[in-house]
Length: 114
Length: 427
Image (cartoon, chains in turn blue, brown):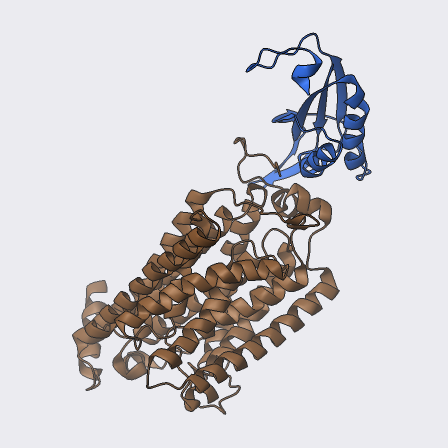
């Protein structure tokens, strides 16, 4: 069991979601995040004064999967993100999961994740 | 000192007044036209909020910017050449121009005798100028979320400076369609369809927003603020009392009140029509469709608000509500992406309203109305196409794919509309 945490650019989300579904990964959590990475900061002007925004809007996807799905999930995210060539495509972290419980039934482990 | 001038002006007024209208009526008429002008003015706030509400939060600054610019462009160009293009006086019926600038008749005498003493020259100008700006705003919603700001501004400037007033002169300026007996009370065709045709051409040339029409079907791109959209519709409705009520061109108690009633009945029936069809077809009542439905009713009654009977105004509005729903679905089938339904509301219901005058009244022939609709259609489409085409060749009409995904607020303006709020670009 692994927890995949990916921080991506918001506009990639719809396509990534589609790719994940194609690979039969149906369960994931998405949240809004602010993040600072390698990409060029956004230049903003407000009432004549310019400033740089470095903490940019990101989307964080958390996917808990059984081991055999880890590569598929990573590929799904990378194929979409790699369509764009510039810096700041985001990062993927893979963590081991100690325990996973399905609340309704009380099952745990590989059963609970799927 | 000032009071002396006022007395003098009042004296001049009372002496020079023509025999046709009493002094009191002149003041009341004139005041009503001015009130109607600021009611039409508030429609621009309605357009701004409606359009921002029905589009995504990442494009809100851009939408608002366009709406603010258009009122500026509309008023200035109308003062520069629009007014004299639209009302050239005696002309050949197809094209006339009475010179640049606004030329008030000389002296207070001329000012009052203008329009047989119904209202002053300036009241006439400001009322008509508000209309002109409305026409250009219609395009803004249909091309939203993907058109380059500079291209849009150039298009609007030329369209509202030349095309709208030139075409308007065919009817309201006393041109060939007027002589033929074509009837358009407050501009279902002259304002709404002329704007609507340009919206159609613009949306078609630009192509749909990224992600709207996918291989797996049509994906709805939701608006980000329904309360704003609703405020917009109510403001537009409020403004419509000036749009239609002011088009009586006097404060004639009977006529203005009658127009208020037909206008309101049609709007209410438009809501009902859109509600019923959206409930039946999509199984749930759709707020955005009901909002469009009330506007549909308003646009459709605009052509005949003073001649269509009360009962028929309900029919006209109700059918418009049904038309607007079907038309939004139809344009989606054609893959013409219109984020706010401007084409369906202003073009389709504008055409319907104009034809309805021929169907529901005996004084105006359906054929003449049809000729009017067609000639305005052909002329508007040609002008809009040529303009959009040239702008597209010269400077690109559409923003880059990357900018569209990030949002036009950052791309065009380097500014956010909801800084500090947590509205993210998620799907």
